[in-house]
Length: 68
Image 1 (cartoon, rainbow, N blue to C red):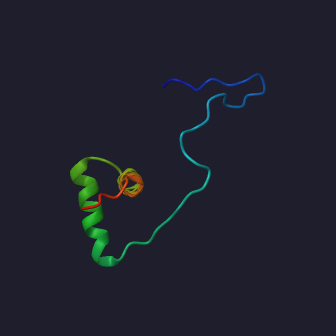
Image 2 (cartoon, one colour; image 1 turned 120 degrees about the vertical axis):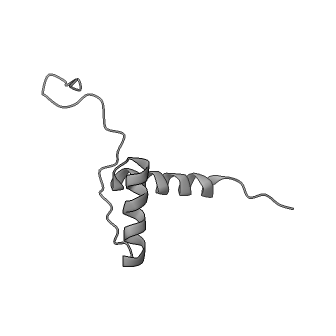
């Protein structure tokens, strides 16, 4: 396991790509089983699936809307 570089006071030099706030969400019972099933199918943790879903949704919202 490679360690992250630290300064002379022992603090990490490179920061984590993650924010400092932890966000929790409760899923409806009807969605919870489907969510965990998808996580397992994709071979990723439920946390990673939630992060991916939120990131994709936010990126979609940033796209300019098409006009007919």
